[in-house]
Image (tube, rainbow, N blue to C red; front, side, top):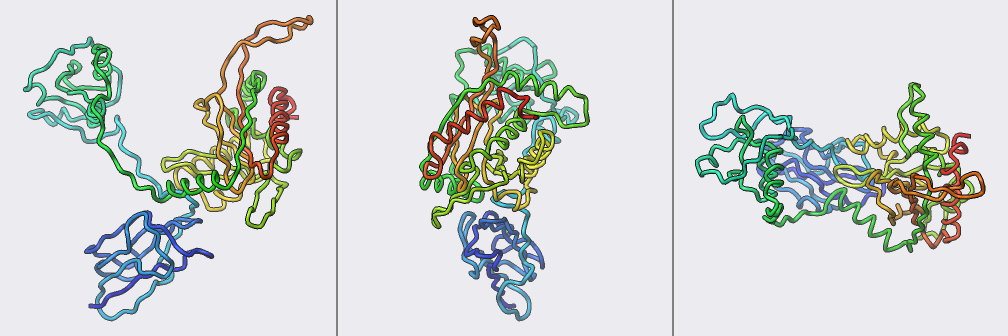
Length: 436
């Protein structure tokens, strides 16, 4: 028997180290040739390291979250015969990813559970997949006996919710078929108004900040530390824009349905050429600002692992329907882990939107090395004074939305940011100009 030392190979130009984001083996495991050993994250990709030899794992370097220098020992493997040490070429498989997680196995959700908990003495025919529904049976919240508690029928999802709320299932009367459902918990809470949901504190949990979550933390901290942010917020009347959107969606053509976002992007791309200092990237080490002609629009996207920013290339050349298709494609790729590295880098200006959760105003953090980020907020309906056409005013219900922008004060002055948003507002409030 001999000991083979697998060293972390050079997995990218200019890469000095990589972070361990997942181990696929532990000491004592048997591996075959080309078996996965670990997932390593660099600034540009997540790379799956594969074993060039077959044998038994003797030791591994570090824990998840540790950073390993290129060329250092990653795994030691006991093999038959005599071998040297090193890292075989081809032992690293690069996933098309930039600051993104490996695909995540979805958690089981109620309605698709093949296995449910069965009460003691219940027949196997009662163990069926439960379809989540609200029950309307009368509430019967009087305490049950200990014998009844031992025979409670409930899916794992219902039991988990009851534990989080601190509810003893023995105190909840089930539906007529004897199974406890979410509707029964809801009725128990409604009937027992003095009951305090969540009174039972959940156990403390320590979560190690690794992988994409650590990369986000480092990038956000660097942005706030290095960039003097300032924010500006303006209110826009989007009533006419919403009417135009509804008319375009009612056209019956073979086109994707438009949300507000593609129309806002068109307005932004039409305005940026007048304000080139906003569509820019600042290399503060070299002291150089690059003002870009094309708009490569970063689109902040929430994924199961954290925030990612896929890039719409040459957004200024797209109409609203092409933008809608590209938004959907990139968002899906970011969420399911198939986005390519060049789809996650090189943005010149970023938009961030929380949709209906957008709040009244936001102060978004700049996506360094860009110098500006814009964020539409929630649309609300409010009464406003409007011209009545006779020289007077009338009160009308209007749809209003705030637009927030954060800028790098080293490059962008407050006057420029305000003027840019006012120009975008003009297009939004006169939407015919957007499609002109």
